[in-house]
Length: 219
Ligand SMILES: NC(=O)c1ccc[n+]([C@@H]2O[C@H](COP(=O)([O-])OP(=O)(O)OC[C@H]3O[C@@H](n4cnc5c(N)ncnc54)[C@H](OP(=O)(O)O)[C@@H]3O)[C@@H](O)[C@H]2O)c1
Image: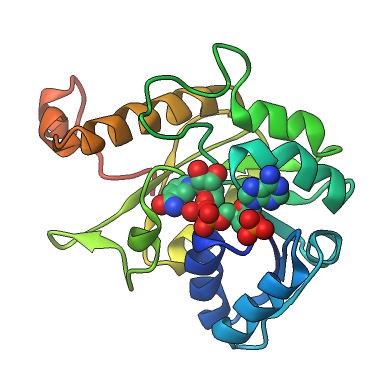
């Protein structure tokens, strides 16, 4: 696949490095193109770097990996993404994680879809720290990490499922894009627990105690 990456920070690095290793063509774009070029050099595997617009135009799939406050400017700079698969890994929050920056309004994912000029948005990869996305593979206790996806377009979801599998993770059906706000809120709550020194995993009982048959993933 041709993957354009908007952003040249930790998430751009963690995810796109994995995909480049798997043989995908990667082009990074950043508001400071030199940062995208430097990241491409570190990534290797033929990755290139340049402007946000170049990365957006390059990708059949585009990863949006910038801070929430920069999302609208970055999408404006990237230009219309009509028809593209746009992966939104953003989290509209910052320490101390008491509220979401979306402030009770539409989710970040829905705002991104609105501003994207018709991209097929899939919310994914926002739940875990960037260090997890660098693992080869991300697996804990012998169990591959599940990655919830929220999106409305079946073809776009199939593409992102493939990219999840490329990391060695297992995609999970998180429902439509309207549910992305729940995923954003759940992430903020979980990160808040981590920052408070708690272990969020301890509050989730095994599936047999959750009212349904145990099911590892959507696959
Ligand atoms: N870090 C994590 O563990 C993690 C995990 C899951 C999701 N996320 C989400 O992923 C996104 C990226 O996080 P990250 O960890 O990759 O951050 P990062 O390493 O700080 O990189 C942020 C990127 O966003 C760009 N950016 C920031 N503010 C901007 C603005 N106002 N206008 C244009 N570009 C701007 C930065 O450009 P400059 O270099 O020019 O500043 C940089 O390319 C965030 O939404 C974050 O919430 C992060």
